[in-house]
Each structure stands twice: as C-alpha cells, then as structure tokens.
Image (cartoon, rainbow, N blue to C red; front, side, top):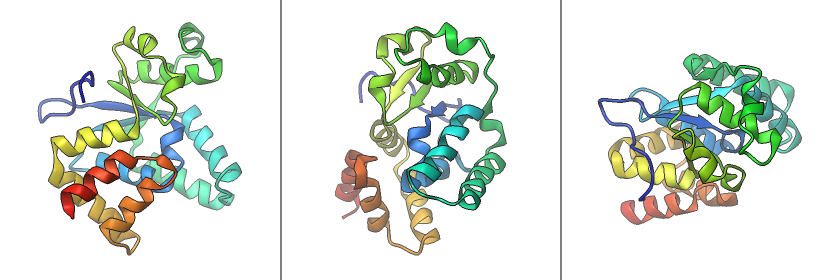
Length: 196
C-alpha cells in the first residue's frame, strides 16, 4: 500500500476520477458507487465523455438495450450530480504525456475535477510519471478497494452487504462476482480471508 496518496479522513474529501473501464462492469461499478453514497468514503468524479464511453461499452460489449443504458446513466447522473466535471476543450491536448490521445480526456477530467486519483483497469495507459506531474495517483480497483477496507472495514462490509441484499444474494456471491474477469481479485480474497 506504499506510495498511495492520502485516503479520505473525516477532515477531507478524497476525490477519485472513475475511468469508464471501472464503470462498465456492474458488480464493480455498483460497489464503487455504493462506497460514494452517504456515509461516503470518497467523492466520485467523471466527465460527460467518460459517461458516453460507458454508454457505448454497455451496448457494444455487454449487449444492454438502449433503455438499460439510459437508465444506468440517468441513475449515475441523478445520484451524483456533483460528480460531473467540465473539461476545457483545449486541456486534453495539453496533457500530451498520456501516450494515447484517446485517453487524454481522462487525465484532463481528473485535473479539472482536482482529483487525487484516477481509478482504472488500464493503469498502463496512464504512466505514473505523467500523473505525478499533476499530483494525481493512478490506482487499480484492487488497490483502491483494499485501501478503503483498511481505512474503514465495517463501512466497506456494510456497503457490500447492501449490494448483496439489493440483488438478493449473499456477501460471498458479490465477492465472487468481483473476482470474475479480474475486476478486483485481491480485494475479494482479502474480504474472504477476513470474513470467513
């Protein structure tokens, strides 16, 4: 856990830009958004372009209907209106340290939202030395969720239990879903080891 920036304490708000890669898989997205609900463990951020990418992936990769996509995005916008970050049009071009021009809007949104971290499944697309220029950390869901668990284990377990209850499952089934497709396997193993 070394090298991670300060995580939310009662005296501050830890702002995390959520890349589309962590907002598409439902089990992961659900848990991340629950952790941002009151009592919040962090403050989520995203841009309109990130939400557009989520919408495209929901239809093209997960084969959601337009109605399902629209419902999910409307829920996110309605539940977290303060999460939407406005990005100046010229800022994505200014962050040329991100190798793929298609990913520059993510760092631009993080800068605009004064994020402490970018949460992504694609860390290799966001070089550490580039993010450090802006005092932003790049984190995987595993790192972030483990950190949140160590900070506030009962709150995290309560959120997982709420997620399980909402889908009429048990905690262990939610954890299994987080292990699938390597969304957060280390975090899932940590929860299993602490609660079994």
